[in-house]
Image (tube, rainbow, N blue to C red; front, side, top):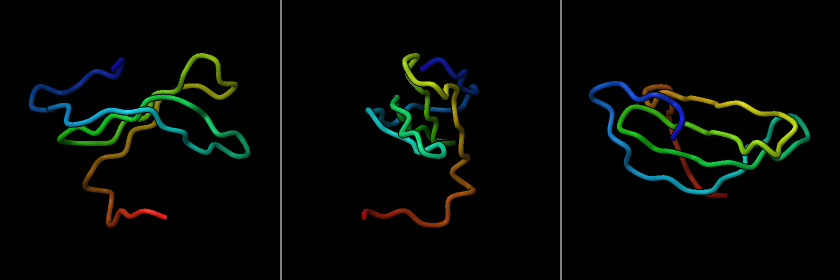
Length: 64
């Protein structure tokens, strides 16, 4: 993971993922830590860069 973690943060899981940014499905890696979700895009995408969501901002999660 390229994103810097804080001292008390622990990496729990990681895996391949896509994130929709407008009409582009951006491919990359999704990391679940003890504090947040972090998506880091692959360099082959037009739209690049990380997305970070604090776990305290997530109300529910589910599968479609």
